[in-house]
Image (tube, rainbow, N blue to C red; front, side, top):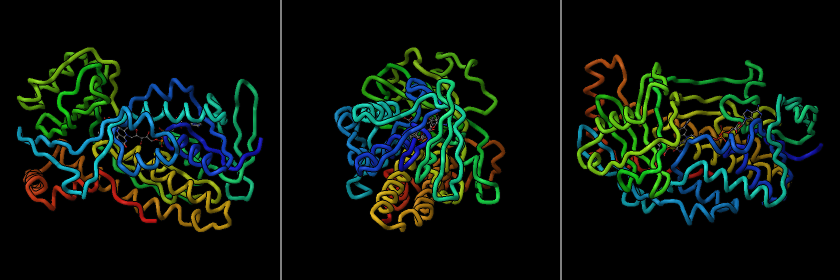
Length: 391
Ligand code: RFL
Ligand code: PHB
């Protein structure tokens, strides 16, 4: 088989890229290791920046998001039992974010791709990437017991943190930057109305908690837990009891509990691989970087990478290699700002074991500054709604 771009991975990065390339008349094949149901079963992100919303519109998949998504104008920080509102439009000249689940977005992208009859090869096993330092890269895979090979102009590694693309780069050609946190997030999804109309980020001495949502009838909650915790040890009742301890009286009065639809623990990590281009192979999304979810940036970064990558490919086929030459640097400038923000939000709002008393006092002063100064709130708001692209 021959194609222009072989995309590895049908998560948000791979599917958005496929759609943008299709719109531009560039031929692409997507290879995915799992089934569509498996991909849709992973409950992950919930918050989209305006630039991600705009990109989904550009890709022609924004209709249901606009009909069913929830535009949000702020978040609440609950610190030491006191609420502080971060007003996004007021602090960022009118910007807001959209609450729309990654599952729904992925479903929209899958349906749009199926409707145009484009090839997504699900359950492609033993995917391997070859000759990406030459003019003719190749991708091999096993499907239904038969081995196949794709010849392409480019490989887009959109295969997530555990994917094969980054792992295929020689150690000498790549540098990894990493910070691992000594806790994870225990997430619970329930068919219950959200506790509040905006997201509540709660800092508590028992640990961080987040009240989020997917719709007016579906809620998503998270609790900071030590990495040693096992999800089997968290009954729904234990989860709700612990959440109550970390919220304030108005939230507890409004909290509607119910059976969980999904419950899982995700470790927190900051990670960046540099560069993101290796000859004719490009990494995008979680394949190249991971952020702790506190800043709601992972999916948004995946979207911004493929925005740059799609434009780079379009420019290439129009006769200029400037876009592919600048891809890595352009992405990384934006990525490092989101990494910094996600690390900062995590540091401010979580309880860290072994924090010394001086650092603890300095952190409390920093939080006090952030919520009580317009400059502090503006810094948080402009990073949360998403920094502009440098084109
Ligand atoms: P994905 O979604 O991991 O997709 C990669 C795809 O590649 C496939 N794959 C392979 N296919 C073929 N061959 C191989 N060898 C392959 N290896 C892997 C995988 O099966 C998969 O389908 O990466 P992508 O597309 O880069 O998208 C990234 C996002 O999924 C991720 O950054 C976000 O979910 C992060 N995230 C959040 N991001 C936000 O922007 N806002 C949020 O509010 C937010 N909340 C979150 C989050 C992530 C969380 N977890 C569980 C990590 C909340 C949580 C709890
Ligand atoms: C979510 O709804 O899953 C969510 C929202 C905000 C975050 C992280 C996760 O910062």
